Image 1 (tube, rainbow, N blue to C red):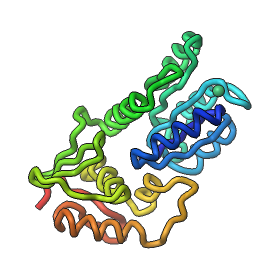
Image 2: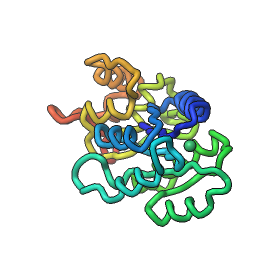
Image 3: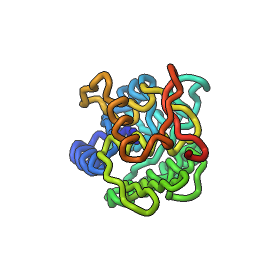
Image 4: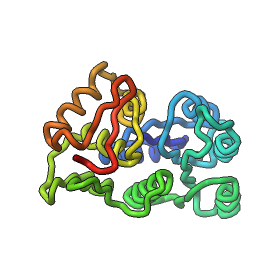
Length: 227
Ligand code: CA
């Protein structure tokens, strides 16, 4: 899960980033309208967490531009947006929902509740009603970040789990290596050139060869039904 946090309160931003990173998510923080827009134009994000009162303007401007972005290129106008507002900003909350925000939390919020709301947005974005992802004997739970094969827990590293979840979410669509990398690595992470291949290799050893398939020259996918 690749998350962009747009928040100019350094304390809130740092706390949120630390908490969401513990969940294995790739989290980047920007503190204004202009840098947020640059980030969205440069890379795909799965969810945007948006503060409204930003140092260089109104966070609603980011939402407005995003929802009016032309189709077929970055930024993706359908990117889910969750608004983070102060208690007294009722009017702003209503306006931002009408402008296309998907959800909101009121500060101060519980980071675990925020994370659950983000997972729900992600489910809706990929058209899924249930929390658990199932492929044959494999069950993947995004909330507990656990995988089970025929009922037995499978030990996965954070990156391995991230790759498996990304592929299961869009199954049977193919994700290219850069698309997978964009979900796993935020700006601070140095990226090893063959990292995704290495993680997929380990995943296949743990899950068997049938789950993650290679489409040569394109990327990886999980088929509708595993062999
Ligand atoms: Ca603020």
